[in-house]
Length: 454
Image (tube, rainbow, N blue to C red; front, side, top):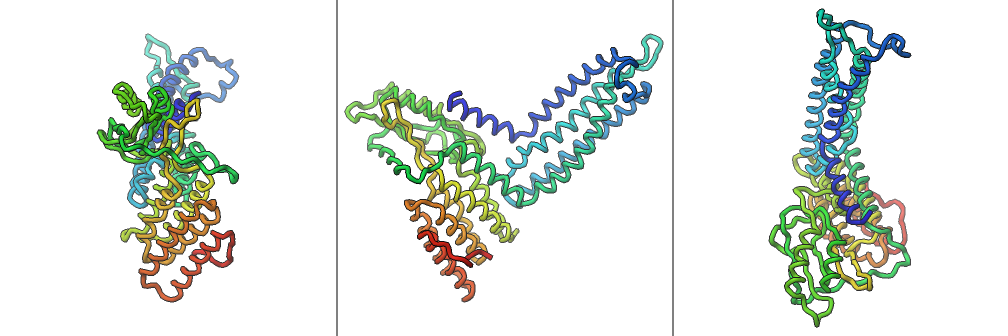
């Protein structure tokens, strides 16, 4: 399986998982099939069937009543389940972040619950059509096995409703939401980024575009969802060019504006019109845009969601710094893990070892700024939030390699400037100063006790 196919499959799988309709629709189709096939099986069952004593034993009217009751009650329960799901989505959007809606809509338990309810409703209706009374022209037919299966599905639906309510109550907790975002972001990082080895040489610098580089334009507007590096590599090698894609998944691109540059590998052999046209077509084919960001190839999407939770919690209408501190803790854990992976531009080489494609990716400095800049500004008047940011920098300082210490030093300087601009009392200023010193100690490999956020 090629890397391009795996990347495309990852995007399709992520898109499908965030839709509510595929799994319930499949369940409805299977329920219709079962509702047609099982009555045919019933017609061949007699009292010698091994479990016939446990099957439904009522007449046609009783079977019709049972199936009608199951169908009517299950469609009501389905409406209730859908209403509760919509309320939960509204709560997540208004209280935490609109970008957390994907976390709820991809919840497999919600999909299974809706599938169970809709399948039971559809199955009961389908079986109901096969129940016949003795009218003289035809003998009474009661699909005993089919009605028994409907009863079992109804009981399973009742149990599913109880479990669903418990699951929903747990899902709307902020702890559950930020943990789900954290886990998704870790999975994305593990899939896209290689682990950094301590003795690995410094990554080579990407080539710098010359002044006459040819711009490659976007054909569609939207969030950049996927980049197929193999398409760009084949085009660059086939035209003797080097391609720099300076937009990465998660950024918004506008149709008709440049998303990259191309130039000849050999300065003495400029790109002709055919080469430029091929590069333009391949650049358009290599990128996929969508109306929303996804986690398929977007390394920073998880941090964006966590930062949104922090920002929303610090808004005047909500004013929940405890939730902000909690989300910052997950941001710290995620940043420390990302610090152990290869970030920055990804270089693709041809068979001769020449760099042909440069794919832009966020650097550690970009990700740290994403996680800290807005919370530092919006939480500037709350010592608890600033303390947690300082602790985040301390934890990050302990994990980053020496070559990345400047990232922590820069953020620490900006944090100190923010603290200096506030009117905190002496005790709060002293605690924040101690945390700043603890960050510096961590940069030198020393962990001091007693410095922590409150």
